[in-house]
Image (cartoon, rainbow, N blue to C red; front, top):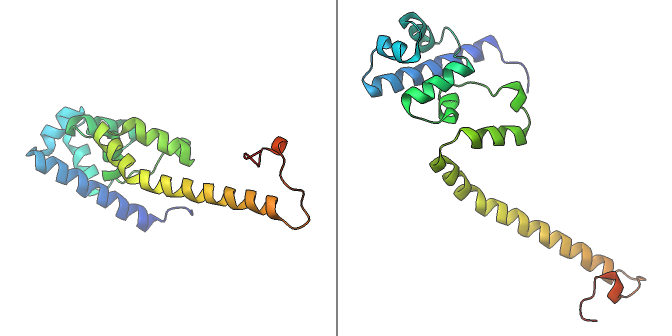
Length: 153
């Protein structure tokens, strides 16, 4: 993926700011009230909501705590890119699981299980085809008990 353009960054920050404003107004809070609970000043909240500045990871964790949501939801809502140390899929999944609520993890598992089962069925079918092709290939030796490919002997 290429470097983010200035226009794309500005648009992302505006979407993140709009999300923050929507969360705050849904709670019925003023910018000053949110600022007090985050231990920042009201001007900072205003600049984040306008999309003038990007929220850092530490403040995103505080926002999650204040709104009673998972860190994952806060990062997604604020449109924050994953940190560089989470660039591999395995690390990103581990981080997401760490910051998800139990309900979110359960929902994710419910969505993923059918896909994982299908993938395993496909892998098993491919392995069975490969084993069958090795055993029935013309000119090949018949399976023996020691080869592990013939369980009937």
